Amino acid sequence: MNLINSKNQEAPIFPEDRKRELFLFQQGAGISISDLELLNTAFTHSSYKNEAKGGINDNERLEFLGDSVLSVVVSDYLYKFINRNEGEYTKIRSYVVSEDSLSVIARDLHIDRYILIGRGEELTGGRQKKAILADCMEAVFAAVYLDRGFDYVKEFILRLLVPHISEVIENKHRKDYKTLLQEYVQKTYKKVPQYTLTEVTGPEHMQTFFYTVEFKGAKFGPAGGKNKKEAEQNVAKLAWEQLGFDK
Image (cartoon, rainbow, N blue to C red; front, side):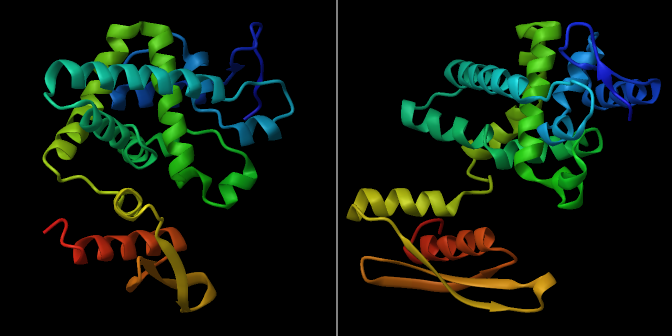
C-alpha cells in the first residue's frame, strides 16, 4: 500500500480498496464514522509507521485518548448501575479494560484483519498479539469519540463491554490467578510468591514449560503451559485452588 501524507498530517491518504476495508469494519462493528482517515490512523501500528517511506501517523496518540474515554465510560456505568464498594469497582473495571478483555473484543470485531503493521511484526505474529489488538481497540474508541462524540462512543463501548462486566459480577470471567495470588500473599505474609522454572519439554517449536510457586515455606506445582506466562498462570491457579479458594 503506497500511503502518502495528508495535508493535516493526521492520517495517510489511502486507496479505494482500503476505504472498502474500513467500511466493512464499520459494518461489522455496527458503527458509522465519517472521517475514514482518522479511523485508518487508529489501525496504524507504530511498526508500520517506522517502515513507511512517507510521513504518516501511528495510533499511539489515539490509544492514549481511547484509554481515558474507556475508563470514564466504564466507571460511569458501574457507578450508576452496579451497587458495589470502591474496591470492587476498581477490580471490575481493571478486568474489563484489561489487555486480555480488550484483545478478545478486538478479535470478535476482526480487528486483526484491518491493522496496518510492519513486516517485522507481521513475521513474528504481531497481528495476533494481545497488546497490539488491545491498543488498537482503544485507538478505535478514540476515533469514534472524536468523530461522533461522547454519547455515541459510550453506546458503542457499553454494547461491547457490558457482557464482560456481567461475567465479572457473576464470577464467570477468566481470572488473573497470578495477580490474585500475589495480592493474597502480600496482604497475608508481606511477601511475594517466587516462581521457579523446573522443566522444559518438547521440541523447540512446541515446548512445554513447567513452573512451581513457593511462599511462606509452601510449594505448589509444578504446572505446565505452552509459554512461561501461561505456566505461571496455571501454577498460580493450582495454588489458589489448593488454598481453598474458588471451590
